[in-house]
Image (cartoon, rainbow, N blue to C red; front, side, top):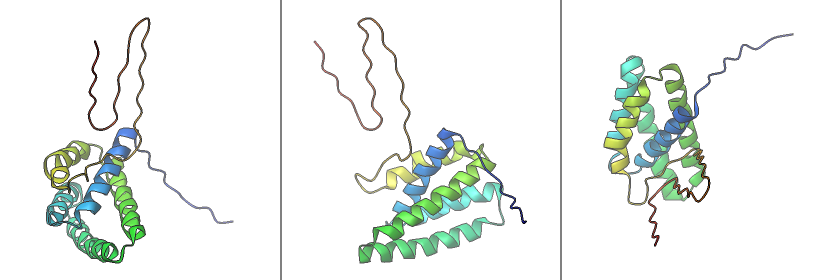
Length: 153
């Protein structure tokens, strides 16, 4: 009987959510004028820990861009969703191996990539776990995304 050696990589929820958001953002940007910013940012991220792989990552993003553009022209959402999953997985594995990159990835998202998203295209993907407790006459207000306006008298 042959046994398989399977390596399970655990990523905490915050890193998994960051990888999810980043993967979605990068693939979304591939179909925009800001695609080279996404390619350069991902290349720089990989270059920090895997300098020999950075050029390959950038070349794969060029290929992914061609796929996304063609899929959008054909109205095929499945291709784009598959690419999102692929890049989310790559980023999740990168962060699992190098959690210290999370700070740089978050900065890249906040300062360079998310502002380049098309209007209405900024979104957070992944789970949001919100917990609150109030007692007596206390109130709890939470919002997972967007803005909250509370008008009390």
